[in-house]
Length: 503
DNA sequence: CGGATTTGACCGGCGC
DNA sequence: GCGCCGGTCAAATCCG
Image 1 (cartoon, rainbow, N blue to C red):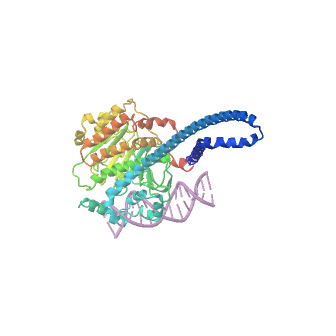
Image 2 (image 1 turned 60 degrees about the vertical axis):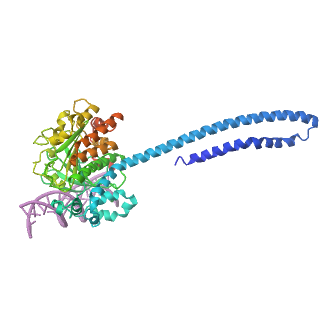
Image 3 (image 1 turned 45 degrees about the vertical axis):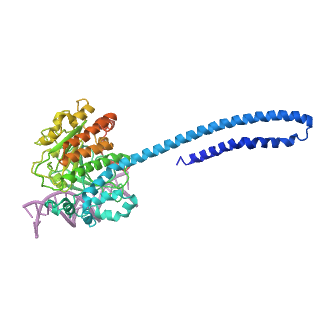
């Protein structure tokens, strides 16, 4: 836009410079010619002397003109350089803007790629709505015009009657067949956070379309639909924790197919990244639901207060409603509560409000359940191996322990920070998702863990990231402290998104 | 008055 | 087949 007039100016300057460059050849004679007629009436004698004076005068003028031209040339050169610099800056900014845009889209695209990779095998059935969940994701790859074109399709296919999971428990007769017969439901991302307001302020626009009293929880569950775009398939469920009503459980489902406000990017990219990680694991570990005889166990990582504990499908759910809702949905939980998953809580009963620690081990979900705990400022790093099964722990040699590496990297006061407020979700989620290298490292780690592969790869990936972070001045993780300390800047809970979004 | 919310009805899946 | 339950719809209602 603003660069447009610049070349024009440059051209003008350029042409002016060229004119001046050729000026001496024409200008001087021209000036002489112009002045000549006035000299004609003079006598020869006087004329000769006059000519000399005038020649001298002309030379003086010529010199002055040449000097001026030099100055103009120099000024022209300066302007040219200035213009070049401006153009370079403009291009640089343009590139940065483009990079930022692509980075923001990468997370979502990763999910889309994952989905199409893991679910796309059932392409034949997809056309017949037997794999509805992939539809919204796939359409995100399309241009807005395309998604607009498929608006009717979206409305019909995004949330069709679920008829696809009858054979979910059928024995695996090859992954392809299973995928075709039992396309998994859309990945869900569950966010647990302490929040006094009805909903989390995630930056998106939501419209409430229903409310139900779910069994086992006196608190009603509210159903919201994203109104960012008419065809946006994203929905969320909001429910208070049955154990601690101060904890708000928000479950996101689907991927936005429209531009998001900056305030919503953090959560959206986080859910996408989380779903991506989950899917990367699900693609390898859920091919045979219920047939894996040996629990892979859980693995956790404490990244400067961000407890990430991933769980295989052998991880158990405690809340019946969540179990039900997660029955056919791969679910990943981002725990932003301040309840640390103590070593005992993951396997035995505890007072923790987290519902993920108390389920009897007789509830094997059909999909892996992954949890990222951002609020657990567990100062006992050694105990953070808590979630790991002994087998998995062996795969994480002490010297490559993620926690230790991260602890060294981000050593912090042992005083636990205050529980994060809702708006800290954005900070926390941004912290883990804004860095692509972290995403890839985390995805690799989780893939290795969930897939039952060599945990060393996971450690390697994470270690490489930590090293990279060290070199980059703790990029990514540094945002973690802001997760906690930024809460002070907004003492009044900003939780109700509607207050912010609609006005 | 238009958009958002509420709330009872309805539907489909699932377990018995 | 029946009942329970989660999820959605849509008319009624509310609200700015």
